[in-house]
Image 1 (cartoon, helix red, strand yellow):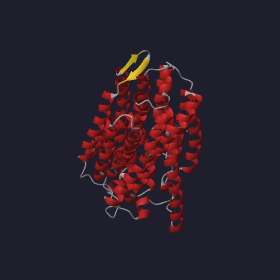
Image 2: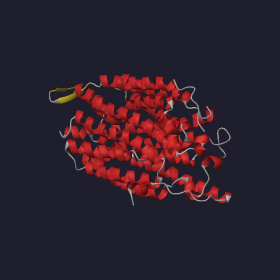
Image 3: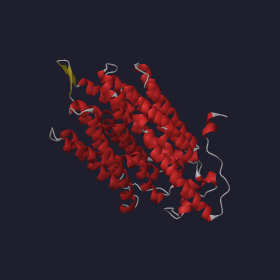
Image 4: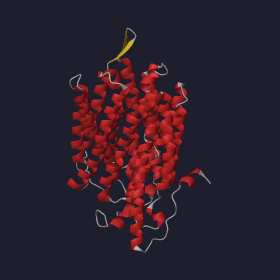
Length: 449
């Protein structure tokens, strides 16, 4: 059996004629799929963020410098970017339960390997491979939502799914921080790795292939939810490859991809360097810094859900007006974090809470939902992957450049490191401003049936 056939989607079965059975199967599998792509993806996310929790111990023990850690972190983002594109195209053709579970399992194994590595080149290779296999998850989730949930409910569903990021981040910032505090930096990799093995098994048991492989009709037919009253010609007659080519020719998706890339600069700057900023720039302990980051993931989860419900219910599935609102909230939070009065931990925490609410809403939209809205539904994975490659190239460039800027701003005084984060901060904030400007140019773009 070839690798492609191992991952390939199953054949369509004859349509079921019993309406009650169709209802039962749709309701049963939709709940299980949401658990897999939300809780499963969230728990697997810890395998991507482990590096951010062990940066200070690795620096303190003289194993890696901040610039070297930037190189390792960038390696994941580069391969994740390429993987998001290629795996997005492949996910449209894949059996999602096999595809998703395999990615999580291999990512978990690579985290276990990172716990043994103190060589720069080996850590770069392992973390780069981790990025590739982590890139199985988001396309699988996007395709599952496009296949199992209809147009006018997708914003809410995507918002719920986007809470997975917050779940993974929160578990990392508190759970992995506690593990590292108790057992050292190696355990910061081993804990997520062991968890990832269990999550891969659970995903395989919960996920399903496309509805048609179970004899179910397309979800838009089952929900009677066609925006124009009937399916579009591409969705009815076109091949998957033809629909994917439509994505590459869509000007709005190119603009969206650039806006997402700039937003991901700030998002991953806070994820990757926020702990170090709070420790070195504000004097917080690892547990206190992790607690502040954990607090903002909770509002982030609320922001993801709020974005989906607001755009579906208040703006009839239009995303641009809500992008503007959440972009302003994100920027307000950033200004509180970086330019607020010193020595005010409550004010700092409030800034992180506001930032988390805004940025996760933007991740929900710019990072995938908006692209799925305006692309043919057969090409949901391709749309997600195309935006994703821009997003994670932005994240990778941020990781390398942030590490360089932070290292350049470091001075030793009486054997003690002192950091100047000011140049990096303007880089992060400026990226968010440009992202919001680009996203606002898509004001008139509409959903595609």
